[in-house]
Amino acid sequence: MERGPLALSFFRRDSALTIDLSPLLGQFAPEPGLAGAFVADQTDSNPPTPVPETGVADLGLFGKPLFQDPSARALARVGVVDVGSNSVRLVVFDGAARSPAYFYNEKIMCALGAGMAETGHLSPEGRARALSAMRRFSKLADGMGLSDLTVVATAAVRDASDGRAFCDDVLRETGLRIWVIDGEEEARLSAQGVLLGWPGAYGLVCDIGGSSMELAEISGGRVGKRMTSPLGPLKLRDLKGGAKARDAHIKDVMKTLADKMGAQRDRLFLVGGSWRAIARIDMVRQGYPLHVLHEYRMTAKSVRETVKHIKKSNLDELRIASGVSSSRMSLVPYAAEVLSRLVKTFKPKDIAISSYGIREGMLYEQMPQRLRDRDPLIEACRFAEDKDARTPGFGKVLFEFISPLYKSAPPQRQRLVKAACLLHDVSWRAHPDYRAEVCFDNATRANLGGLKHAERIFLGLALLHRYSNKRENTRFEDLYTMVDEKTRSEAEVLGKAMRFGAMLWMNKAEDRGALRWFPKKKLIELWLTNDMMPLFGEVAEARLNSLAASLGAEVQVKTTKS
Image 1: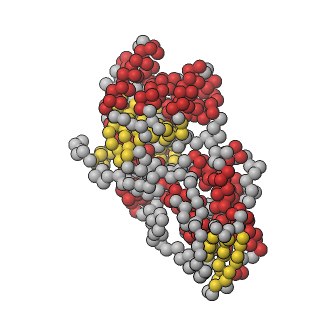
Image 2: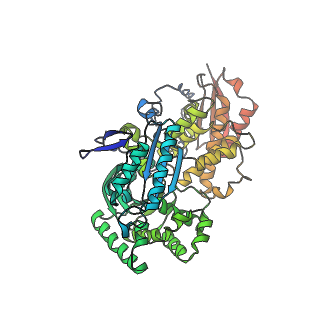
């Protein structure tokens, strides 16, 4: 099918869809951090203006939510299939399109590209397994009510002499039409997957599959230069000449890539199952407590040490300790050789693991630009509140009520405060004895984009303190050490502020009072209307005092006319 430079053709069941790519990716805020401060002193003696009632527009710091917009609802459930050289995977996305949940995710290790270096065609066993997988995925899609699936195939199918025949077999038996993409398109889609999780990210995306490795440059939300290479572990395993020949081959190819890509000294984003397996081994080696691969960070030094660890370890023991499958572990030593040379060649400032890749890039491809520009964390939290909270919309009210504590805080901290307020009530169905722990567990392990691991801990601690004054004696105490004491204290303050605010205003349509915070005086003022004073009972007073104690502050309660 003919396509222009800014058009992309998706092939679905017996039909074709061409998507215009002319809207370029937009700018986004810098990557968030954890630095923050409380609001500067206010000296006005007049009572503060009560926070306004929540409006449909929800304009302000984070803009109008888009998950109910028709353009986003069209992406509420999207199915994609990635026919790779090593695995065939079906992913069905659901929920808030900008930060989707994985409604269904199944991978079948087929090794389509095994032996291609010698034969030139797909592995017969792998081909049979892949065709069986496609029959299953087609049936599953029908059972889920998906009208179509987007299917892409990468290096093995595009390079094999019988790749087209395989696609014809799949179409005849399942009705699924496969889009075979070239290496540069594969690199572009993988880079877009990274942008799904990191809006505004900059650096080098490296996606390793079974038969190829792709590089793509991202900056300011745009995909720049991109290249493909034959550095997939399946091809390296079949290379004759042993370790010495592999090392020379990897070095030569990497030099060519570096010459054409130019200097790439920013962040290195690693995409692909072999990279994730190495990261998992690195986690186990270092005793890292949070077993979430997305946003896991490595350094050049840790890569060197983990590569050495892989070389000297028994692979079966390593596989059991790290939870990596046997088929994946067989490729890890070859991938480790590539990673070692990649880091030596490009010298990135740091290294981040991305669980988002080509499949997420296929979803990102279908998003309108205004949805791409949104903060994935806030969109996901809004969706969760709308679906699970007792009073959807109250999270914004709560955020506005406690915002005097954070008036001078940078946007990075304010977005975490907003996220916490949106999530503060979504776990109310949990048993009261476990609600605090459920909140922490959800925040630290949920599928939320745009969050560093330290930010997950901050958010989890804040939500834990939404339901509990204490954080000691839980099964998560090893995770608390991932942030410093100052951050833990600030999370406690946020949690107690939400705990108090939720006590007073369960009806978002009521007239509300307001908080004022004077950090220099160490004074909290609570202003209430006469009509609202009955809500300020002894439990509410105890919670306000607990908040004040965490701030080392005194409390004054004042009334204003209704």
